[in-house]
Image 1 (cartoon, each protein chain N blue to C red):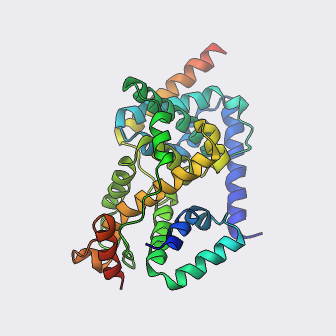
Image 2: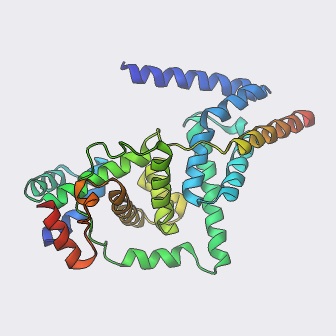
Image 3: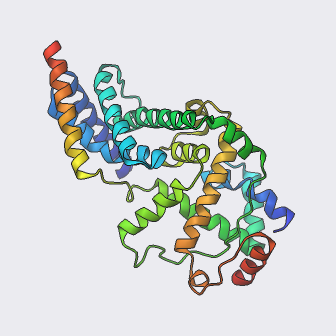
Length: 84
Length: 228
């Protein structure tokens, strides 16, 4: 990995978040045109972040816990109402 | 106004209506608010803790706290974001107490991390065109879970706050009591480590045929061959 690749690495997050300066974005894009390895890293890092930000992989609650949770909340609610 | 903005506004309006009803004593309205974001809140706590009993405690505590504090909820953020913040704070407290049990502070570990140079990417292989094709949804979820659970606490907490909960750098720094510079370094490390892990699962042909790059210079050379 070249010195230029190393320099680019530290700017990847800002580039992917859209918070990098225009100059840095241009530098990264120019570098990626000639560097397949960096293009791959940036592309797969972008997909990695998208996976975790995406809603489609939000988890389901374990069903038994979900039932308990709503029961507990109802009990707590009624206790509060009783106090008022 | 775009359709998405319109939908968001409608959601906001119906959420505000539910909050008002809940404040006036309607449990069903509160319960509906909870059902609307319990999966999101669970996911945030689970991704920080990766332990079921602790996650259950944190999620339940977060909704109980939200119930107590409903009268102070001003609707500046949406309800899910608000409860999500309560849950992530509680989950981070659990992480800190785990550390205390092991007599290590989050920052002791983190300080070492932040000093070291950011490791170079090793697996330099494009992902398959549709990386999850042929993999069950549940298996994909487990791959993501395992990858994030393997991160050290100091990196995982930053990643979850920034990329799962969508807090900005300053908010993340404030939640964790670290500097914005630390947040940036840890986020980059976390993202790159997750990228390596997910590339193992979702990498294209080159991974499938066993041309996987190893570590160090040899690894990079092998990866360069694969990419060529």
